[in-house]
Amino acid sequence: MKSQTNLIEPQGKLVNWVLPVLYMALIFVISSLEQPPLPMPEFEWLTIDKLYHFIEYAILGGLLTRAFVKAKPSIVPSRFTWHTAAVLSILYGASDEWHQTFVPGRFATIADWVADVLGSIAGVLAVYLYYKKKVF
Image (cartoon, rainbow, N blue to C red; front, side, top):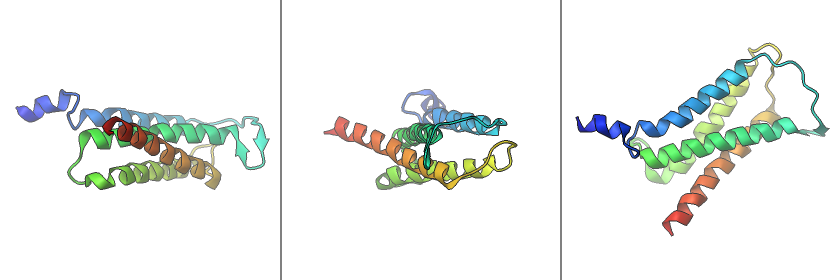
């Protein structure tokens, strides 16, 4: 009975994964939509699209990091919490780019994935700095 109440408490393990999983599902759904070509201002390799990728994955990296910090899964030693969240977010970005190759009107690019990687790291770092400041 104790484990059931633990799931609904704010510090429960399962409840901490709801937001990241829902957000990942949202990314998947949006990436599944056929995208007509949109005119975007370009600055050589940098487009507004890269900023969207960066923000999107900064949010995911932050949500995953928060989930790992709050849930404290036993399979991930606490010293690897930050690395694990970053790697999962980065891998999800790679899988999303690959997924887009199957969607009409969409395509995968290394530049998009690099923006995903940088955003993931920024999101993890932001949560790390938040908790570091909170502890000290």
